[in-house]
Amino acid sequence: MLHVASPIPRSVPKDENELIVPARDGALRVLAAANEVGIQRVVLTSSIAAIINGHSHAKSYRYSENDWTNLDKPLPPYPKSKTIAERAAWDYMTGLGGDSVLELAVINPGMVYGPILEADYGTSGEMVRKLMRRDLPGVPKLGWASVDVCDVASAHVKAMAAPGAAGQRLFCVAEPVWVSDVARILKKNFSARGYNVPTRVLPNFLIRLASLFDKPVRLILYELDNSPKLTTGASNRCSTGSRAVLRKW
Image 1 (tube, one colour):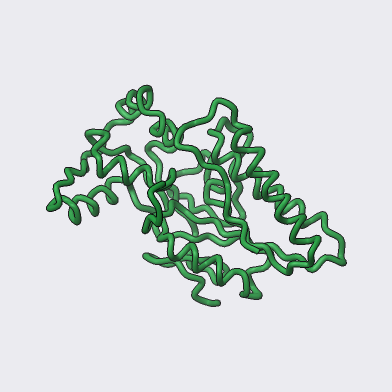
Image 2 (image 1 turned 180 degrees about the vertical axis):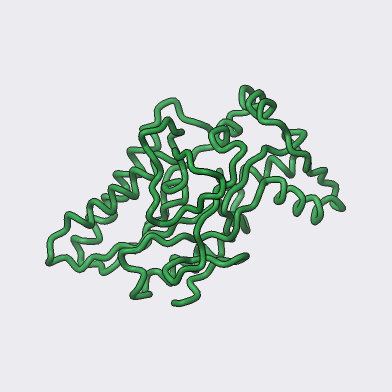
C-alpha cells in the first residue's frame, strides 16, 4: 500500500491543526487498515521537512535519516505536520505485536519538481508559477534539496518490493538547488517565448515585506537564507547528483 496524501496549503492556515490532525490521523488510519487485512508493507510519503527544521546547525552540517525536525522550536504548520505524522507512524509500528506481518518504509523527498498532470498545479508548483509570472521582481535567497517527481514515483514503487527498504527512512533528493538556479534555468529555456523570469536575488527584508500582501510567500519565510545539505550516497538512500533512484535495489 502507498500512502502519499498529506495536506499542504497555498497559505499558512490560522489553525495549525488543519494540517497536523489529518496528516497524523490519516497515516495512522492507513497503517491500521493495512495491518487489519494483512498487507505486508506500507510505503509512506514523508518529507525532508520532517528532518531539517528547527535546528541551529552550521551551514556545513549534513542531515541524515537519523535527524528529526525539532518540534520544540517555533515552526510553521507544514513541517510540524510532516514530522508529527511520520513519528506517529513509526510509533505505531513499534507498538505492533509479534504476530503482525506489516512493514513500513518511508520516502523523504526534497522539493519536488516536474511535469504537472492537471490544471491544479498544487503548492509544490507555486514557486515555478511565481517565477514564470514574475510575481516578484527578484527571487528569495533560499534553496532546497530538490528531486524530479518521476524519480519520487520510481522510489515509491521500488520501496514496495526491495527487502532492504523495510524499516528505513529513505532520502529522495539530488544536491541542493537555490531558487536563483531554478530561475536561471527557466529564463534560459523560456525567455524566447516571452517569459521575463526574474533572476536577481532580493534581500530578505523585501521578501518579508512582500509576504504581507502575498500569502503563499509566507510559507517560505522560515527558510530564508538557507539551503540545507543532506548526506547522500549510502546504500540505503535514494539519491544521486541529478536524478534520484534506488540504484542498489
